[in-house]
Image (cartoon, rainbow, N blue to C red; front, side, top):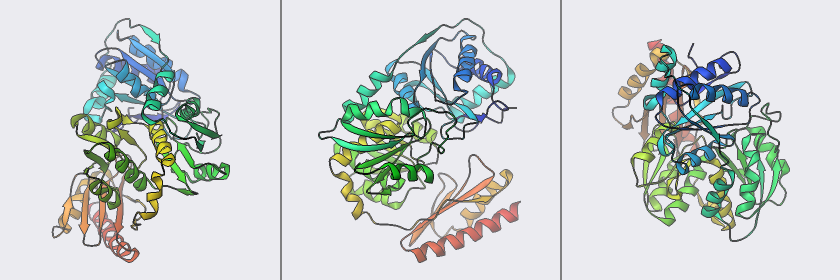
Length: 441
């Protein structure tokens, strides 16, 4: 069974879907596919070390050399892959998933995220056919922590001290996050700072209400709260007692980066029109892209004019800061500097556009594209975008209907100028989607 191969990564439960034997076989497929040495790291899950050792043995058995960076956040591996000029890298992680999960993220040269068509499909084919290369690869270890901290500090050093509170969620960022923040000039209050792959307090994800609650309870005089996800490629923020929405974070980062140099800013098509407005008013060019970090990564690596990119899941990319990868640690450091320079005062002036939650409506896999085509045809009198599903632009807002990449569901999200407009758009579009699903099921 290879049900753990997904669009962006490999992910499954341990040990029933992915155990040491499967991990070694994945390593053999990966080592057969890549050309050149591989940088490997892992998160702090309880089974992570065993899975990583098995994966590395598989890679080496194909004659591919391994550089082992140990237990570090994913962005540290992405940084290391560029600095060490390796052909590819692999992180053993299941990100924010519950403790029983494990998985793999792969990148290509210059920290380009590997997509399904960019290599994952071929690796799966090698895995299933078992047509593995044979050889005797070497292994050496490397410590990237000090160099990575210096890299971030060089980009984000504060002019004045700042008090911050950080909820690591018992994830792998607890090993480096405090050192990095202190290096840029922060005094740090830490929450859930013991690396514990069982995640005893809450799932390590910025959007988790319990993660936000525990951080708020720990804060007193701190000017900023930071929440990292399980492997450190995402971050969320609390300012003046409130969680900053991802749309607002995208707008803030866009304005900050565009002040230093004009260019293109990529955002996924779920983002509020606030984001597009702030990019345009700051002299940048907004670009919508499909939902999914591999699509954004590919756009960044194909277009040197892109200076910043982000998505509503909390992934932020900083090519203008020499980091063309998703990096929650760098995002946190930059947000600290922005707070110290009073840049977050502009939050109060941002318009508040009503937005719906992302509705997930059951839909058979075989019906997804038929539903999208039907909805597109229903709104031929409106401006639409078919970058990912169909996005319909109404006079007073928009609606996005797209198939889920991970579940047998259709996703519906709407935004409007007023609450009444939102209710009207959501009600109409949801009814049309449900009727289309019923028709094609």
